[in-house]
Image 1: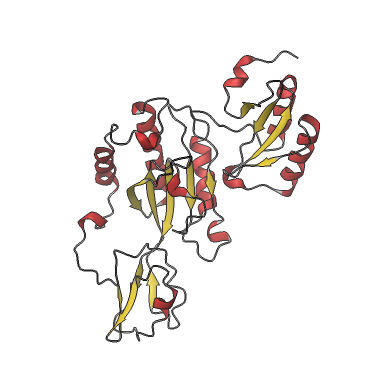
Image 2 (image 1 turned 90 degrees about the vertical axis):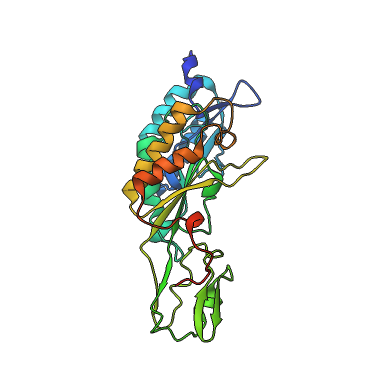
Length: 301
């Protein structure tokens, strides 16, 4: 069967070292599959590939050893299975996420639902550079979101009624950042050390320590690879719909201004990231004091 050469411009089709074979990468938002889809992938891999599948670091699956002449019927089978062709090149690739509030006791946000919405709106959009998007429900960063072009982290700020707190120190014990100390029987938090994970909130035996509403911290310009880099903080918002709007603005900004063949992380200064950050914060500010504007007083709560 003759193969339309345009198929090879699709990011999910990757030529192997043996040019007579290719790898087919699937679209699996947040890496979530039903048992039926999983069985279907196995059958498709046995029929069209070499009988094996590869689990990628971006929560998707690759089927190796595919005869290029069988790509078209294979793609039809994958689409019917609900696991269509994925992406790899200069486009928005598979959106990744941790398990979120449905499953994880440390989670602050529903990362799975957010990842699905991001996938529905932006997956596969052609870009001048590859754009990876990841969502972690807390600063533990299980999805390595800050090492993606666009990262979203769920956070909660600790809040406390000073009059009711007994200063028992339970929250201090559970703080992994050593940001909480007991001074003269009172709890004091060093905000410069706090990562706003919310892990000090649940253990409070008297339910005095509360957490703020879940918030979404968005970063830009992270990367993995041979020279890893943490993304720069853009803004923190409390509405998931605003997150989707801001992700859309980041995608548009990148599409219109970024250069090809250069990682986004290497272009932020040339793209005047700080000006873009000001524009986003002016539009989406929630009257929160940003870290660079806070006083030097470390007492918090």
